[in-house]
Image: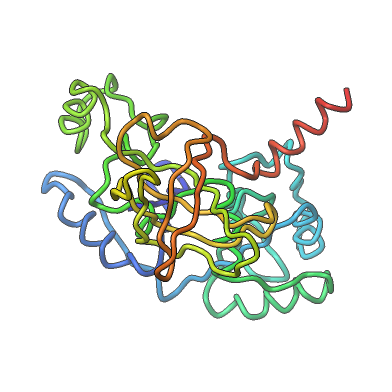
Length: 289
């Protein structure tokens, strides 16, 4: 699964994940809880709600609702940190995270406070616009951010999913270590999750997932898509998918994808088509130096 752990106190953790994997995650935790462990697990899913506020001015908007002054500047409130805030009377766990790669905060509140907080945010910033799952999908795919349940499932291992930076085989034993070590010793994964640019021309159709990827010369299936969408910021059709054989993972490799019975050219991209906001800012600053 994919979870975020917020350490509220030395032995008190606030854990969040995708709502449709609530029972999956609870079951896993309970099954792996040892009899000699003093661990209490409380499911507060029905009691809590979260608002994502994103954009270059997200912190300024949130700051207008602070009941007590708190420095929300990105230099002080850094990525993957959290703060306990009181926003228009709502006790809030604010987390500096963004699934879409843009600046912003997750605001976790009691469920009976979320509507009021939502309305207050719109009051202090009339320019705020609502966005949902389709927009989130567009932003995250064009930045190459995989989604658990779509791009990463129990059928994929961490090597092929591109999670190498999180794998530390030298840090002792953990669930799945033996399997990951065996894959590495055998030469690594035989397939890999890659970014794909879809060449549609003027046609208004995008991948959605599970479309076959083919070798253009032979027509042989050499992979499959997992997600796809029109990239709002990239201005191009983009997809993520697993491709077999390392010679096809190189940047610029041309393949084909079947969409609604028609073949379209796709190009493997080693880098995402859009950088996250922080990376864009660093590049702009370096270019102007």
